[in-house]
Length: 231
Image (cartoon, rainbow, N blue to C red; front, side, top):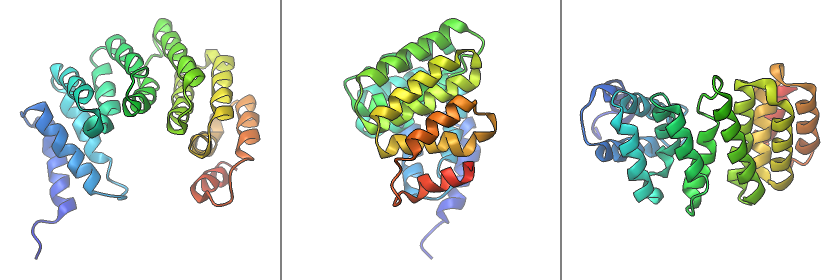
């Protein structure tokens, strides 16, 4: 009675988005509207996956999207991580350098998403790339005080460790530093690592996470659920 079913129509759009030819900015606004309108639905992020395929289908699109995000971060920053991941499939060196550059931007929304992006780029085949990524995250952890950025640092450092486990001590030190500075959001990120990756965690990581997760407040139900799952 109120028009087309939102989620069904959105699903159709997801299916055809990779094959659409349209101005990148129009696509970005449409994707964000559909993403945000889905609310807390578990499938809300699937439209972002379709956007990433759309970007990868044309090498110029990630770069164009990146410029649009920089020009209007307040509206478009939520697409930064997806844009950098898409671009990294075309040129991992270029888009890692862009993520690192934006991790030091004056705009906090850009920094939040850029720090998360660093761990999403596949650096496993190139030591210089993974070293640059660790160095950037170390700098971010050292200077940042924002809880969300510190949480994203934990996620990115652990993602790098998963790609190449030869730098366990470095990853351990950086995660410990972020947890020492961070608050409830950073502890939630730690609970994700503890809860969903317990089977592959070194003993040193388990002990580190347990020490900090002891600080979780009883009211933080989702964090406690992750801890329970890990146990």
